[in-house]
Image 1 (tube, helix red, strand yellow):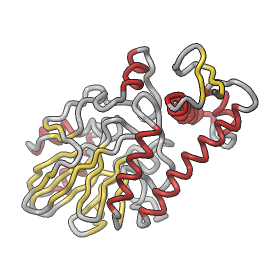
Image 2 (cartoon, rainbow, N blue to C red):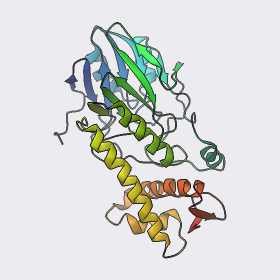
Image 3 (cartoon, rainbow, N blue to C red):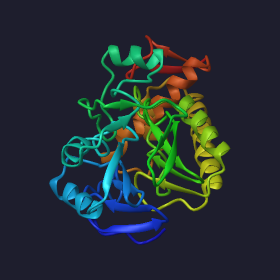
Image 4 (spheres, helix red, strand yellow):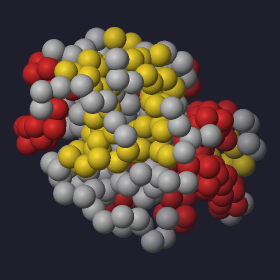
Length: 298
């Protein structure tokens, strides 16, 4: 993996693609959030990142005298979308996204959210409201470029990726530095695996993720992500041979090298698998499906 870029610097990654790193490094965001500028005279800005005046200034400096026609949001996590409002105010460009933060949730995830399951991961930007909603397959363009919108739920129900020919901006669905956090009710394992199939079918040459360096080998990376999820499922089922357990107990057994500060996220990943296994009738929750439930192999 390449060396960490400097926050605020605008770096050309491909023809008509530049990246600006936000100054928000963390265990969940790695180096920080990648903001991408697509185009030359007329730009799309993908993921303006957190609401940070330093990052906004860096984006505006990189934009220079160009026009901004689109502000594209991959998903409404606080490290990706809050900067959109200030950027829109400065440039006049509308904000595009899948919908409000809860858009796209499955019925089971809607039920879990209604019963209080929340939190986990990077945090949801509850105030996010795009000016224009984008459906799967929507075409967006300017005189400089044309992109196809791909609905890629899994990390987030309303997660979008954007395909520029054989380059895809994958948000947090595919990253090169780590596997993707799947934290219910926004994260969904079954949806994640389906979205991996969607991306694989595009046969992209390169992925530009929301965090970390570009992914220069998309097909093997997708294969690894799918295999990683299947391996984790097998580990959970094997651990349940020892008897019923909740997500936190299982996470403690499986994530033995994970720092204590990241164990809540690990438990959410395990819970996501347990929800999927419950829907497939492979495990049974007691007393019902919830974060604190005790799960037994069916």
